[in-house]
Length: 57
Image 1 (cartoon, rainbow, N blue to C red):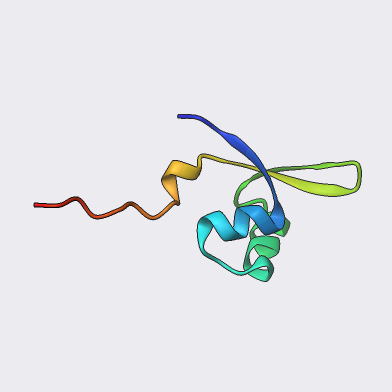
Image 2: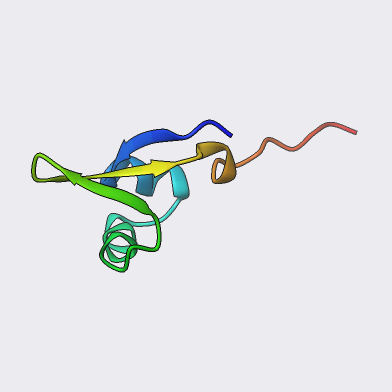
């Protein structure tokens, strides 16, 4: 499991949700996050959220 660091806007895009929804999750501490230099940084495993390409049968 490779964890990557994202800004709120990047994390929202990876997860396929709005920035507002991501900010709510940060505020509730539903995701791993930390405030660094006045900005929220989010740690995610993007493979858990990126859409998988359908495999050919």
